[in-house]
Image (cartoon, rainbow, N blue to C red; front, side, top):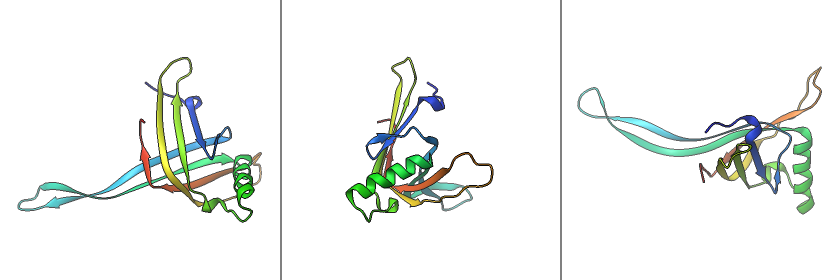
Length: 136
């Protein structure tokens, strides 16, 4: 099954984000070839895993997140939040659905800026996470 952008739904902090323009996430694992006698790899040594990604949102979505965080704690900062991200790929008109879950995500940067000619602000929020569960 193949999905398009319109099939994507991203939700966290209790809401589905309508003003999302990009969603990227990945799980990586350090791997190192182990050598012995001869010149060929004998095995692969596995190391640490790392989960990270980026969400690009319209400014209104980021401001709404900040307001929601400040409603529970007036001193809250988006960098303080810990949250799960639900990602669903739902093909319209079918029962095909793929669900991924990003666990205990935390933003690592919240850049803002605009340049001449911009009609709106898009903010790329980078995050790290504890784990990513694919196809749950």
